Amino acid sequence: MNVTDKIKITNEDNMALMARYPDGYFDLAIVDPPYGLGFKTVSIPSDKNTNSQQKFYNDLKEKKWDNAIPNKKYFNELKRVSKNQIVWGGNYMAQHLGNTKCILIWDKMTYIPTMSQFEFAFCSFNKHPKMIKINSNDIDRMHPTQKPVALYKWILEKYAKQGDKILDTHLGSGSIAIACHDYGFELTACELDKEYYDNAIKRIKNHTAQLSIFEI
Figure (cartoon, rainbow, N blue to C red):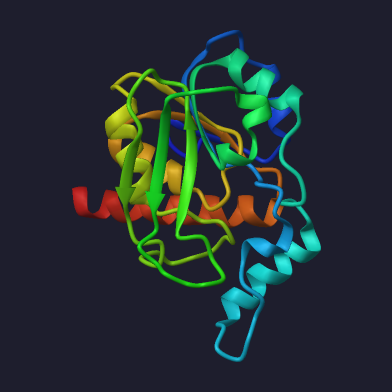
């Protein structure tokens, strides 16, 4: 689906998407694949948890999409179609990504004993490691592993240049699409889960529609 003239998102397997593109077609792949943590990704619901937290716990437990990291074929294909890659959770996938001196560290600024305070991303650029502080609670969450739009905007500012073609093989909540739209980047992305895909499309369309109103 062409959400805008620069944002194309499909509901399909990422291997099918990447197979349609030639070597090095995308300038930068920014992806957030499963970490292989299962439903341990979110804290076990308690009386203090919200309905959304309960849903996220159930989603991860029942859909089982986070039970394993992508296989070697996925990473080979990702490297084939993109010139550079930023992979969230890269510390869980080192056997497929290899060594790098460029690591991104996201300080979530949220200190919960049962949750990770930081997330790491593998970065293929020959640059020094960097840390960014963005509050992970400062979002209207609709996906268990949703990341803030501000985080993707920071990545685009630091590692992309105007005219770059961006790839995301695990769209999730669609935060990267909103960041790419606001900054004018061309994005090709996919999401396998139909529920998450539909919710992301709705979120992105609502965002672009609001911007159009302000521009009139």
